[in-house]
Image 1: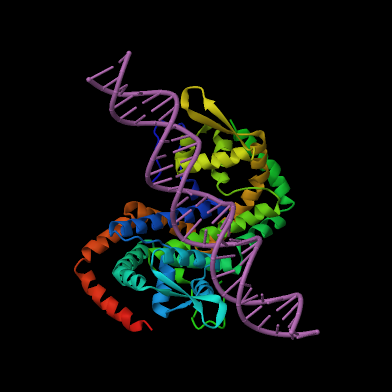
Image 2: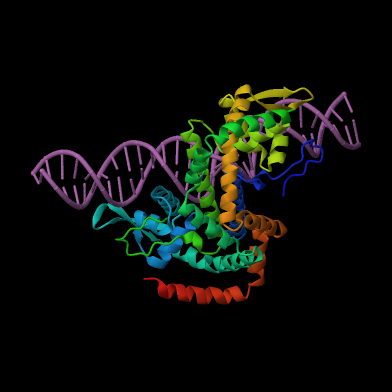
Length: 191
Length: 191
DNA sequence: TGTATTTCCATAGGCGCCTATATAATCCGA
DNA sequence: TCGGATTATATAGGCGCCTATGGAAATACA
């Protein structure tokens, strides 16, 4: 996975394999990007311009019909500006209509265009195949999705911020000692 | 977790809980961002300007001493432009020195500045606390890190792209049938 | 020695999300 | 009725990574 530079005096390693939020966050991001990239290549192979961010919006509109930016945001669990941005790119691609809401001058009704519906139908079997692959992958990884679920739940119970704050506050005296010991140990290791 | 809009006619749901690469990718990204955000809040609380992307580079330079952009990229398993970009922001923050390599006119030697070293030492106990939290979190989630490891390994064995390609190619005839059935089923559900 | 190829790094632009902010419309209480 | 508070959405800018590209230096080969 890593680029092995045999002339490197330094042993290459995947630094995201270490613990710590920086490593964990980076690792999750990297996996996410790898998955996005691979899925993107499939669309490119099929000659279909498609963006990952379109999927949730398209699916929701196809399944549930016209709705507002805010409802979409709530339904998809993402922020309103994200929906707004997605709406904009979908519209630019001719896949979505925007109309004023008859009952509220602030609100916009979003709906898939004919092209949007056709694209959705065209991609449905692709997504079905992707789903099947993801299911297999999940089984192969001994249910990584459940593990992510557990992580989600754990962070919902107590956010990482809270956890770290508690650790820092609880270790207020001990961390002084750790600071000195840590600094010393680190200083010795420095060439 | 979701914004519950009680006036919404649509049942909100976390769409990343579904299977499929789009959902899985989005879920990983979301977790990554949540973790980044929470860690970022800690630095903000401490009044320390710090960016997530600095961590790997700083740690490596502190531990191993001056090195080149390319070596850092290999060591950290990220792309050279990412290192280049991180180098730039570190330098702008006064945390890193850049020097020409005496033996190769194309290469640059990167090293932590005095300020960079001091920041590293200052943050070490914070990172130690973060590590401990991550360890607890990992235990609480029944080893989510191992699950991510398995996902990494599975994708290294066979990329998602390959897997989806195989599924699409294998289902060439079946997917025609699925397409018709799927389209029909979907069309009926559309209001 | 000259040229083609490779290596190193900087830069540009993109991705999909986020928060912050601004503007306009709507609601509600005095 | 008016004005403050709330709601709906667009826009700006940022994050940390990526690929693609370009320029310069080094290397390889005829």
